[in-house]
Image (cartoon, rainbow, N blue to C red; front, side, top):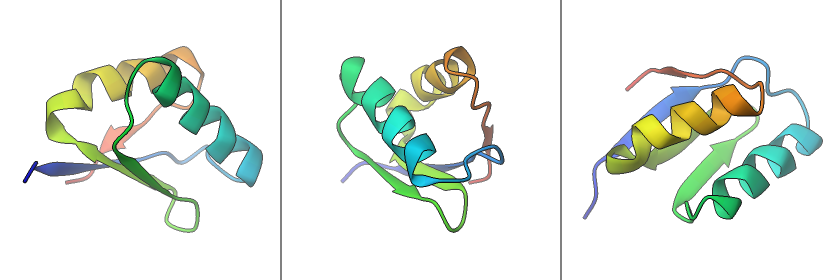
Length: 67
């Protein structure tokens, strides 16, 4: 079982945002993630955390680790 981290994405506000983030992750080979639009956060494998944060910066949805 992998350890999960939560990343808060304050600028994520709609389903288009979710689709854009999902596509960016999948394009970079990140398949295991769970996006919660209502909470404005994504849960990812901690081993991929730095890559996830970098991707979010690149697509202009900066995130911060909450857990």
